[in-house]
Image: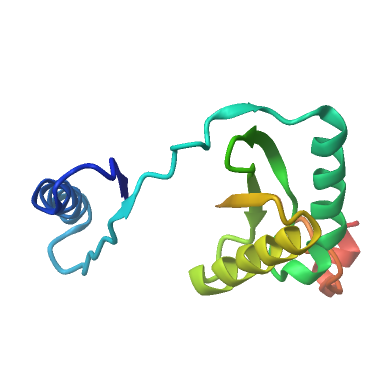
Length: 151
């Protein structure tokens, strides 16, 4: 979780503990909940929307990179901001509901590395994935017979 970086550790830990307790309360005490505290990265990351040509170029690059991105089916809600520190890119993607968190995390990390190699002035990439219940094929992956027959 990200918190104000000027908070004392004791206060940040208290917030983290409350979050963990709330999750356990909702999901049951048998679940293990661990949080990780990071300083909120907003200093210099506020800014203005990047120019439309750059947004289109990054969007096209992300879409073309989907076959290397494993389970990611699409990229949507793309936002690129130009800040004093550099470019901040956020996007959402759909994945099959049964995809593991590790597979999704690895795919988003791969896209992040790819973006940063193409645009070195990117200082932060935030990828958010959500389950896709629409049975769309994964780009660059062969369709199953069931999915191919439905197409």
